[in-house]
Image 1 (cartoon, rainbow, N blue to C red):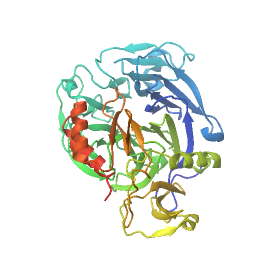
Image 2 (image 1 turned 135 degrees about the horizontal axis):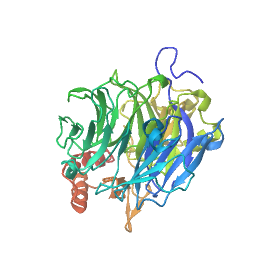
Image 3 (image 1 turned 120 degrees about the horizontal axis):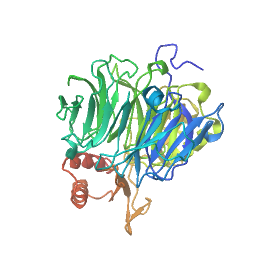
Image 4 (image 1 turned 30 degrees about the horizontal axis):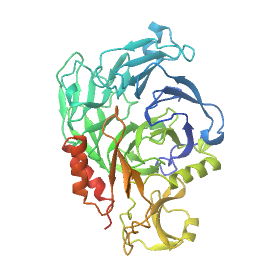
Length: 473
């Protein structure tokens, strides 16, 4: 195995390793066991397990679907967790641990992984009264969204973190739709600590340095576009800013694999952070608009669950990087990815260069060039060792936005629009379609959308900023 840290001491950059295909709808949940076996859940109503065998092969990089779990949930299967054999095996007789899946049907199914594929769940956990969109297991404790004994369930809980830190065993931290985070002690229905700082619904939580049993820090992300680091006493340590969209997922990366933290959201971008320095280390693009879930495997690879029904795997190990055919497939998909904001990059003074410049490697990860492509200006970004086309620039300096006749239209309910974008509001509901034209007034578009779908007022400002970024400057 190659080192996951460069000679300068900084982590190696992630590169494409594989893409896993099998689900027929958005992949919403990811988990892994201690052998780097991967588990996924989807809006297609199934859960699947994946294993990697030997050398990289084809687009799957040596990964194969191992098991299919279906027929035991009704509706979407949105969450997944693995409960290790060290937790329950002695009592239950399992050699491989247990897989837990949470569904739109309010059930948690528990599968004994020592049993043959197709075996019915060993247990069904009943108690929730709504979609179980988050699961976390530590020790012998399983926690899921909307635990009915919590008085705050009416607010909506997006994520839950079971705490195994020394001195805090059995505690649960919840990410709530009212922009607050709450820490509950065992057997208590009242929050012991309330964390205030986010301004919109909190979507995900992650333990900082999970391998350190004494670490009392965790991270949260929100629809407000920020990531915050907290200690268990309620103190805000730092904030990581860089996303321009809702942030859906957070995961810590093992220290032995280079460390850091990964985040993802509604912009098709995964960001890698040095949480100690509060700096972004890398930006990974995937060919999907929504990145719903992330998990870091014990070998350091990063799995990414997306709205394109695929799981993308990236690695810091050169021995597991994708072959040329897979990279070409990735670049082709990336070129046609949904682009929520086809606008000029932040540096408007960038010169437009000839396409021959693309033969020269970028000077750093994330570098952007404006390139003349057959008379039109495209923005290219240096990502994972390749120049990736982000799309045509229509609002840069000196550029004129194309006319409606020149611009491709998208159809929605029989009408043509410049854009029709997916807005995900709840895990147990399909994404809402937001159609609009470039000449539309963003305020009017958002007001009508919020009124039509009876959304909370907290969504209005964020949606307005999202729609406004499409408008010609």
